[in-house]
Length: 103
View 1 (cartoon, helix red, strand yellow):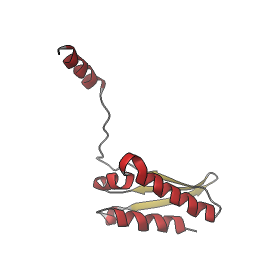
View 2 (cartoon, one colour):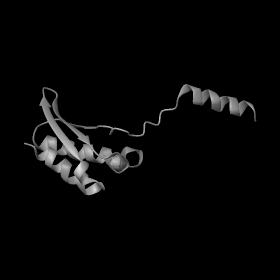
View 3 (cartoon, rainbow, N blue to C red):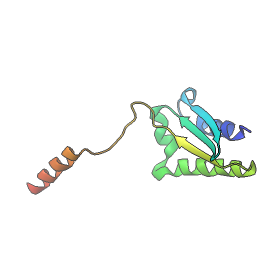
């Protein structure tokens, strides 16, 4: 019943530049099947796609495979170590506001 895991590995490895860094884990519990995936940090953009469209498409296909096997399948894409977390700190927002006041 690991067709979903094999499918995900096949698709993702075809999309990324570093296929050897793709790690897929599959767990089953009362909520259904949870597949967690890690990829090289340089490949995150390829997996997520513009506005998340590639990730949404992969999730949709996994759900279809799950329906075929009477299982609920969810995908979690883990952020790689050293990934770019582009959160804006409060101090930089304050600095930007001060810059705007000076104009």
